[in-house]
Length: 437
Picture 1 (cartoon, helix red, strand yellow):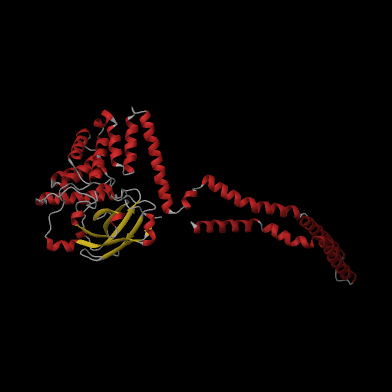
Picture 2: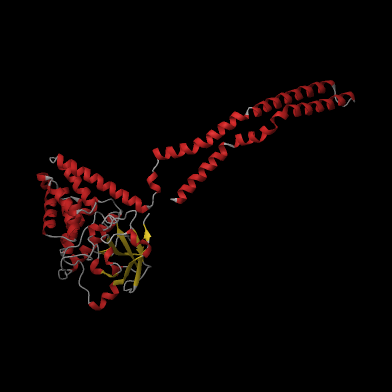
């Protein structure tokens, strides 16, 4: 912000210097303006005397003398006119002073009207304002919907707004207020299933039922196919997962990150289906600090996300090999930033490949109140099938304290990251010491 103000001030000063140069030059001449006519007359008189002397001596013809006299007269007239302009410089200087005052004021006024003054605020302040604006707009929409409840589109919009704020229970209630139209709309059914996956950190009977309803209504619904593939893969039904993702892939933009991610998952599903891959024992219901559901992965990195089901998506690994497929360390919050985060703010801890897609290879979450926190990231916490920690040559552990409660990156989040390490590294120290701009 300071650099911005300094740059603006510098540009204003440069503009004034360029615009006021004529006034400054005339201002320097105005001191001698009263003497200029007398000085010019004396100079021209001396020059005329020299010309007449040359004519008398025979070195200058009469025709040349006449021409020289005319040239001197023209110069005298020009100099006299310039002197008159200089003597009127008092009013021009007043104009320069007015310009010097009005130009900065006009620049500030136009920026306030047409620019984005909030853009120069610190990132944390911007994030807080954006969140406050979103909360305010959502509250107004909720009030409007209570006054006009017979509006399915409005309830769907309100549900999505609550969902973006991480208010799962409010979003679920808003979806139920849509009424009979909900059961007829495949996209809405898939959205509710996605919400339940986010809320419960995994698939449950209700979310599975909604996915199947959505696919019966619209067999090519992209979100339902994505979620259906994730649920099937997590449950060990690899052929079904390959079928869902195989139908989804042609509908995605070729060579996009979404397409590459689905293509990788599809290849893994086909490989395990052909090889008769086995499924590990079911895990207990996830709780605080357990695996981060795929739907909470940043939306610009994974196409709308998909959570793992209650069954592990990877074959069980012997305990002896676990250290080679995990990274261990400790997360701390820098003392200078402790006042910037509340105890209930969500902390996302995830590992990414140093050379490869930005999709996290393993992730978990905690609270600021849990810090400092010892962590372990391993293949059992893979966000998507086919992309796990042990498949990377080097990884980097990153940590984000989210002001919004979701893993979607936002200005004002507190972040930190480790150096690049190989899977199996221990004793990492990750300090959260930076505020996202």
